[in-house]
Length: 184
Image 1 (cartoon, rainbow, N blue to C red):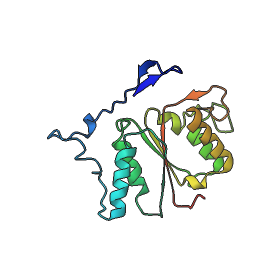
Image 2 (cartoon, rainbow, N blue to C red):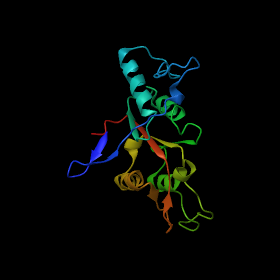
Image 3 (cartoon, helix red, strand yellow):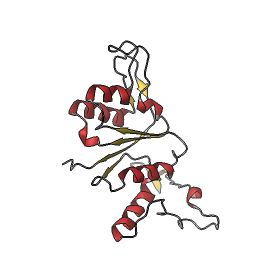
Image 4 (cartoon, rainbow, N blue to C red):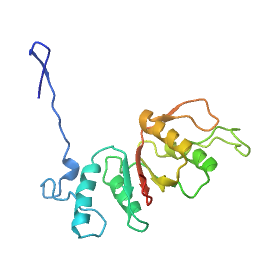
């Protein structure tokens, strides 16, 4: 697409290129393997999910996976990560419903030495461990509102402060979240 200034004078060009090499099969045909994941499902609904997964795997967009318990949300998250450009980087899974809020904040964002009783060493936290990769937050619907605010800040700024820390930590992490709860 050509760019023009206010006087309609051409000033540049925008060109969008997409690397399809990861989608090419051994035979050289692009898009043949799109939608082929290590998940069983042959219904029309699952075919739509596979198509959507093929598109989402090529982006760094944050993703929310919803569905009843036992429907394979974890498997979808793992496949999205493995099929993405981050596939060779860490995939860190955190169950937000399994830990109390005070521990969960420290698990996600880490803590400084001496931040609380028992914090005898620094803890990097799951976001730092997932740097360059993907963090998968299961049962995101169980997060408290204050912790949701901190998570939103990480999504917006790609940075956070560890519990008891004063140094801002920047991370490059893709967030995939899942819940069985109706979030509305």
